[in-house]
Length: 132
Image (cartoon, rainbow, N blue to C red; front, side, top):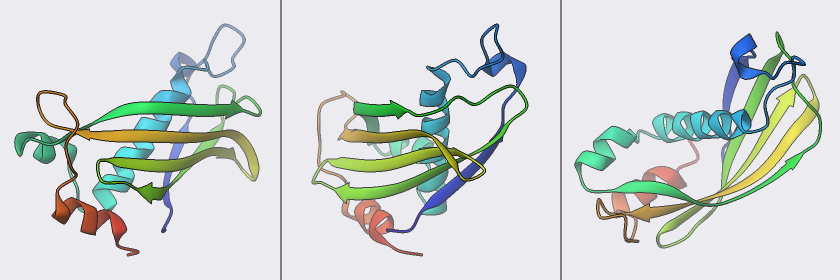
Protein backbone atom coordinates (compact mmCIF):
# COMPACT_ATOMS: atom_id res chain seq x y z
CA UNK A 1 0.00 0.00 0.00
CA UNK A 2 0.96 3.62 -0.48
CA UNK A 3 3.31 5.11 2.08
CA UNK A 4 2.68 8.29 4.01
CA UNK A 5 5.40 10.65 5.25
CA UNK A 6 5.76 13.09 8.12
CA UNK A 7 8.86 15.23 8.59
CA UNK A 8 9.78 16.65 12.00
CA UNK A 9 12.57 18.64 13.54
CA UNK A 10 13.82 17.48 16.94
CA UNK A 11 13.54 20.19 19.58
CA UNK A 12 15.15 20.41 22.99
CA UNK A 13 11.93 19.31 24.75
CA UNK A 14 12.07 16.02 22.77
CA UNK A 15 15.40 15.05 24.30
CA UNK A 16 16.95 13.90 27.53
CA UNK A 17 19.82 15.71 29.26
CA UNK A 18 22.26 14.21 26.75
CA UNK A 19 20.47 15.70 23.75
CA UNK A 20 19.14 12.29 22.63
CA UNK A 21 15.44 11.83 21.84
CA UNK A 22 13.72 10.25 24.83
CA UNK A 23 12.60 6.78 23.74
CA UNK A 24 8.90 7.24 24.60
CA UNK A 25 8.67 10.30 22.33
CA UNK A 26 8.94 8.01 19.32
CA UNK A 27 5.47 6.70 20.20
CA UNK A 28 4.15 10.26 19.81
CA UNK A 29 5.88 10.63 16.45
CA UNK A 30 4.40 7.34 15.24
CA UNK A 31 0.94 8.46 16.37
CA UNK A 32 1.28 11.78 14.55
CA UNK A 33 2.36 10.00 11.38
CA UNK A 34 -0.61 7.60 11.51
CA UNK A 35 -2.91 10.61 11.93
CA UNK A 36 -1.37 12.11 8.78
CA UNK A 37 -1.97 8.85 6.90
CA UNK A 38 -5.62 8.82 7.98
CA UNK A 39 -6.02 12.46 6.96
CA UNK A 40 -4.44 11.83 3.55
CA UNK A 41 -7.06 9.13 3.02
CA UNK A 42 -9.88 11.53 3.93
CA UNK A 43 -10.40 10.21 7.46
CA UNK A 44 -10.49 12.72 10.30
CA UNK A 45 -10.40 11.04 13.70
CA UNK A 46 -12.55 13.69 15.42
CA UNK A 47 -15.30 13.09 12.83
CA UNK A 48 -15.02 9.32 13.34
CA UNK A 49 -15.49 9.74 17.08
CA UNK A 50 -18.55 11.91 16.50
CA UNK A 51 -19.96 9.06 14.39
CA UNK A 52 -19.22 6.47 17.11
CA UNK A 53 -15.95 4.95 15.88
CA UNK A 54 -12.51 5.30 17.41
CA UNK A 55 -9.17 3.49 17.37
CA UNK A 56 -7.00 2.35 20.24
CA UNK A 57 -3.45 1.04 20.14
CA UNK A 58 -3.67 -2.70 20.78
CA UNK A 59 -0.03 -3.65 20.19
CA UNK A 60 3.34 -1.99 19.53
CA UNK A 61 6.57 -3.72 18.56
CA UNK A 62 9.53 -1.34 18.26
CA UNK A 63 13.17 -1.89 17.36
CA UNK A 64 15.35 1.04 18.35
CA UNK A 65 18.29 1.04 15.89
CA UNK A 66 19.95 4.42 16.43
CA UNK A 67 19.19 7.68 18.26
CA UNK A 68 17.98 11.00 16.95
CA UNK A 69 19.48 14.13 18.52
CA UNK A 70 18.53 17.71 19.24
CA UNK A 71 18.36 19.63 15.94
CA UNK A 72 17.99 16.56 13.71
CA UNK A 73 15.37 16.41 11.00
CA UNK A 74 13.62 13.07 10.87
CA UNK A 75 11.10 11.45 8.56
CA UNK A 76 8.40 9.06 9.76
CA UNK A 77 7.23 6.62 7.10
CA UNK A 78 3.92 4.82 7.57
CA UNK A 79 2.06 2.23 5.57
CA UNK A 80 -0.80 -0.12 6.19
CA UNK A 81 0.35 -3.71 6.05
CA UNK A 82 -2.98 -5.41 6.72
CA UNK A 83 -6.61 -4.50 7.29
CA UNK A 84 -8.56 -6.84 9.52
CA UNK A 85 -12.27 -6.78 10.24
CA UNK A 86 -11.67 -4.50 13.23
CA UNK A 87 -7.90 -3.89 13.13
CA UNK A 88 -5.23 -2.08 11.16
CA UNK A 89 -1.61 -3.25 11.08
CA UNK A 90 0.87 -0.45 10.38
CA UNK A 91 4.53 -0.71 9.48
CA UNK A 92 6.39 2.45 10.45
CA UNK A 93 9.98 3.65 10.27
CA UNK A 94 11.74 6.72 11.58
CA UNK A 95 14.68 7.80 9.43
CA UNK A 96 17.34 10.47 9.51
CA UNK A 97 18.53 10.92 5.95
CA UNK A 98 18.82 7.28 4.81
CA UNK A 99 19.61 5.83 8.25
CA UNK A 100 16.82 3.87 9.90
CA UNK A 101 16.46 4.91 13.55
CA UNK A 102 13.28 3.03 14.47
CA UNK A 103 11.25 0.19 12.98
CA UNK A 104 7.79 -0.46 14.40
CA UNK A 105 4.70 -2.56 13.91
CA UNK A 106 1.62 -0.92 15.43
CA UNK A 107 -1.80 -2.54 15.59
CA UNK A 108 -4.87 -0.37 16.04
CA UNK A 109 -8.19 -1.84 17.09
CA UNK A 110 -11.46 -0.30 15.95
CA UNK A 111 -13.75 0.36 18.90
CA UNK A 112 -17.04 2.03 19.66
CA UNK A 113 -17.41 4.87 22.12
CA UNK A 114 -17.78 2.22 24.84
CA UNK A 115 -14.22 1.09 23.92
CA UNK A 116 -15.48 -2.36 22.93
CA UNK A 117 -14.29 -3.83 19.60
CA UNK A 118 -16.43 -3.20 16.56
CA UNK A 119 -16.18 -3.79 12.84
CA UNK A 120 -14.60 -1.01 10.87
CA UNK A 121 -17.19 0.99 8.88
CA UNK A 122 -17.13 -0.04 5.20
CA UNK A 123 -16.61 3.54 3.95
CA UNK A 124 -13.54 3.86 6.18
CA UNK A 125 -12.19 0.51 5.01
CA UNK A 126 -12.53 1.59 1.36
CA UNK A 127 -10.65 4.83 2.07
CA UNK A 128 -7.83 2.94 3.75
CA UNK A 129 -7.56 0.42 0.91
CA UNK A 130 -7.19 3.10 -1.74
CA UNK A 131 -3.74 3.52 -3.24
CA UNK A 132 -4.14 7.21 -4.03
